[in-house]
Amino acid sequence: MNSAAALGTTALSASAAASDTIRIAVVGMNGRGKSHLQAYTSLKGVDLVAVCDIDDAVLAKGSKFVEGKRGKAPTAYKDLRKLLEDKSIDAISIATPNHQHTLQTVWACQAGKDVYVEKPCSHDMWEARQIVGAARKYDRIVQQGSQSRSNVALQEAVQKMREGVIGDVYHARGLCYKWRNTIGKEAPAPVPAGVDYDLWLGPAPQRQFTQNRFHYKWHWHWDYGNGDLGNQGIHEVDIARWGLGVKYPTKVSAIGGKYMFDDDQETPNTLAVAYEFNEGGKKKLMTFEVRHWMTNHEADLHEFDPSTKSNTVGNIFYGSNGYLAIDGYTKYYSFLGKEAEPGPSRKDGGDHFANFLNAVRSHSRGELTAEIEEGAISTTLVHLANISYRLGRSVNFDAATYSCPGDHEATAMFRREYRKPFVVPQFV
Image 1 (cartoon, one colour):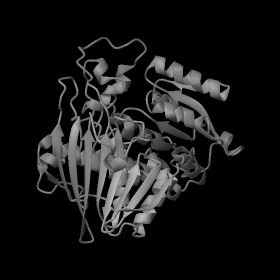
Image 2 (cartoon, one colour):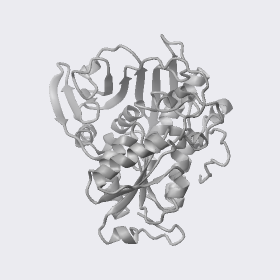
Image 3 (cartoon, helix red, strand yellow):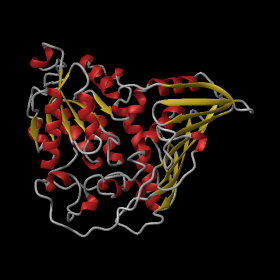
Image 4 (cartoon, helix red, strand yellow):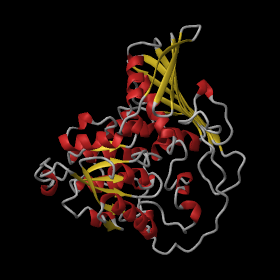
C-alpha cells in the first residue's frame, strides 16, 4: 500500500489499484530471502516488481529467479534508499541481517510503504519500541515474520489452551536443539567483488571483512545477530509467550556459553533461560533452551519430520490437567490427566505472506496474525535473555518504565551506538 504520509492516504498505488495487485519488493535474497521470492512469485494478487541486495551475485541470482517465474525481470537495486523512491511500490519484504531490520523498516514507513520484516524485528530493546513507533506514526501495516502465528493448527492449539483443555497453564517451554557445527576461524580478507560492504554494515561498527561475519555466519556475532536464540529460537519464544497468554516478564535469568568449539563465534551455542511473569497477580513460568549438538526428542518433538535425528524444535505447555506439545510450526498434540490419555491434536499449516497481503489490501492491522507490536514484545524476550547472559546474572524488568529498575548496567545495554549516517530515529 503506497501512501504519502503527509496526506494520510491508504489507497494502493494507481497502477496497482486498477487490478488490486500489490506491487512488492524483496530486500535481501540470501537465506530466508529465498522463501520471500518463492512466496511472492507464487501467490495471486501480488507482483514482485523489484529486488534489492548489496551483493551483485545474490542480486543477479534473485533477479533471474523472479524473471523466470514472472516472465519479466524485476528492477534491481543495490541501495534500499533508491528503491524506496519508487512511488509505485506498495510494500517491501525484508530478509536482511538482524542489525538492519529496524532502520530499513523505518525508512520504508517514512516512504509510505507497508512492511513484512523478518524476525527478530529489532537488534536491541530500544529499537523494539522505535519500530512500533514508526508503524504508528506513519500508519503503516507492518508484520513480523513469525509465520507460526498464521498456521491453523497452532491457532487451534492456543485456543484449546484458552478453553482449558490442559487446565491452568502455568509453564511453557521453548526448545531449539539444532545441529550447528563450528564456523572455525577466518582471517580478515578483502571485500568480495560486487559487495557494497558499507551498505551491508549499515548501523553496525566498522570492522575488517571476514567470511565469518558475512552470509549467515553473522548470526553468531553481537554486532549483527542475536545468536540462535534470535535466529531459530525467536519462533519458539514467540509461540511460548503466545500460548501462555503473557506479555513482558518481570525477571529473566540466562546461563550458558560456548562448548566444544574454539572458533570465531561470539554468541553462546548452548543457553538456558528462565522467564518469570506476574500479570494480574498470577505468576507463570517460561523456560527456553538452545542446544547446538546432540539431543533427545522431548515429547517426541522433531523438526518438521520424524526422520530428522539431530534437531528438536518446538514447544511444550504444562497445565494442571495435562500437557500440550507443538511440533515445529504445523502440528500439535496433547495428553490429558495423570494417565496421559491422548487429547486433541491437529496438523495444518497456513500462509503468513498471504495474511500480510490481505492486511495490506484492507489497510487493517487487526487482520495481521503477527502485527509488529506483538512481534516486538516477543523480540524483547530475546534481548533481555542475551543481556542477562552477557552480564552473568539475572535482570529484573519493568514494562511500565521499559527499564531494568536500579540496574543501570543492564538498561545501558538496551541501545547500541550507531555508525552514521545509519541511525534509527527516535519515535517513543
